[in-house]
Amino acid sequence: MNLLNGRPYVQGTQLLDLAARATGRDDALLESARFLRITDRIVMLAERHGDRATSVPGLLGSAAFLLKGSRVEYDFIETEDLAPRLECAEQKYANRLDHDCALRGSFEATDLPDLQALLESMVQGLKLMHQGLPGGATDVWFTGLRGFALPVDLGPISCGMFDICPLRRLVSGNRIQTFSDVRIHCEHGQWRGQVSFAFSVQGECDVD
Image (cartoon, rainbow, N blue to C red; front, side):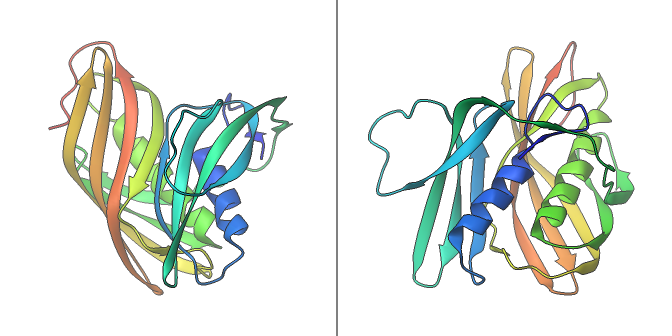
C-alpha cells in the first residue's frame, strides 16, 4: 500500500483489495466494509474470530466477505510505520457523470481490469457528486459499504453503470455522513448495496 500521488492517506480501496487477496478464495464475495478514520501508516490485517470483546489499538475499520457456507471478517490495524509515497499515472475511471444537487444520479466507468478498479470508480464518482453539492463539501472520504455481494475475482469490465439514490444523512456539527443506494450494472452481472461518505461543510448543505 502507498500514499498515491500526493495523497496524505492510504485509500480505502487499497485496503479492500488487500483483504480480498487475503481470503485466498476466488469464490469470495465482498459484503461490507467500514472505515473509522483515515491513516498515512502501513496497515496490517487481523482476521476476526468471534465478536470483538474489547477495543483494538490502532483499529481503522473492517471488511467482511461471504464464502460458501461461511463468513470471514478482517480488521484493519494501523502500524507505526509510514506508508511509502508513490507517484504514478492517475487512473480516472468514472465519467459521463449526471446528477442533481441531492446526490441522485448516475455515472459510468470503462475499461476496469478488476474489483479494485470497480471500487475505485464507484468512490471517484460518488466523491465528485459530493464535491458538487451546494455549499461546498470538503474533506470528502469514503466511510463504508454494506449489503453487497461483489465477486473478488471479477474479470475485466468494458463498461459499468452506477445508479445512485440518496437514502439518509447524519449531521454532527459541520460534519455530515451520507448513505446512498448504489446499483451497479455491467456485462458480468448486477449488484446493489449501500455506500456511505463523510464530509465537512462551512455553511448549510442540502443533501436531502
